[in-house]
Length: 247
Image (tube, rainbow, N blue to C red; front, top):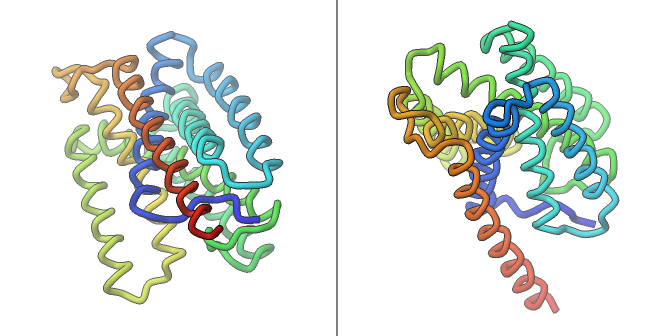
């Protein structure tokens, strides 16, 4: 039974909103509340596992459950990346390379066992499990890439967001004007939306002296949470309309 959402414009808007919220909420726990990256990662990975189990045993698509898992992968990915890059001292570039290797390995095993990386026709438990593992590491990678662009590249938060936004536009154009596999383009876009969310989240939370808008982690998280809830409600409305039409 199909348990994943349709890939539409609304999907990508919600993905960016959820990943941006994941950035601000992860920073809220690890830095603002001073829990630390290691403990924050353990807490958020535990939440991810709980939400993932609920998603895997669910028999139908639930927008609230699905986007809760997406959000939990995003928050866990934020603190996991920060722990690797900052606490372990790997740095953003090295952390990104390690995560790229892990993500490519997940894709390789997924393709070898399931014969496809398409997300539009996942109907097995194993396929869905690969899907969520790939999402977890893509969101972790996105955090490291976003931090690298914002802090090490010299682009700053706004410049990093503009660069990723430009790359996303190129991916969109490639979908309509090239013969590049839509599966490849999907995963490129999925990875890129995470650093876009990371840099946009930093733009919202950081002080004006650091090039941000100074909403803080609490204010930014509240704004993004309200936006995501509104989008989830909209998803339920569209889902019910589709069910009524089929009926």
